[in-house]
Length: 356
Figure 1 (tube, helix red, strand yellow):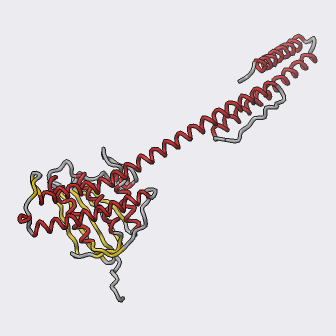
Figure 2 (cartoon, rainbow, N blue to C red):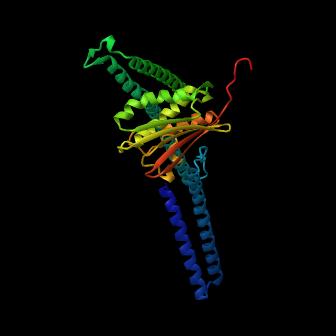
């Protein structure tokens, strides 16, 4: 950064200071040229001050340059029409280095921005895959069960073998598949529009029927995995004013999480309890899995946070967002190696009757 001429100038200052100081001390000590010796010492002191000022000027420029880099200053410019050649080269070097560093920072920023955008798209695709699979997997399982009513070993059964119970199960299963297909289409459309949930389209519907549909959806899979599944609604018939598709997605997420928590157990149990107190509705989904550590009780609701080797960590975050959009809350309590309960609390609206 410093030119040869700068080094020569500094060296000249040092030599003159040494010569002046030596001459001054020699004159004063000998007593022959006290006045000249004093003048020489004063000259040496002045040269020292001039050298310090000269070096400080460069130090200030270097400090300004380094501070501007530390503060990400983008308008720094050193004038290149300096008074002497050394300053000209120093300013030109500063400007050249700063221009290169600014260009590098810009490229790094663009690269980080691209990486973040890429990661966001990856997460979005993982979320979509997660939600779609959550809805499709039980539908496929239920479809296999319905097919078994009509054929065995790829051989169709006779119509006379169909009982009223089988026909009833088939109709209910097909209605559940249709409902889940509609829910999936609704959710996919929501994500298609920049992955944002629409505002709830609330209407009055039977919460009891919705929960029974979901039980039908997962009953076959739970039997295969030896998971007990019970539903308790108090009162037995509950009407709720909410977005049925959204609430269905929340309950599916909670049940799916409970089933995953019971993967390593042979005595797994999942309970859904619905009750009303004054003007509040409470839906509790409980499993007897290993539980959630207390320090992670809130982290599990953070988008993309997960302690699992699979999944995206979006289900619970999405579920809490949906419940809050309905004016409610979703919380969790857990006793390790005993049970974990997710509690949905929602305000109750009284159904409006025609003519009122």
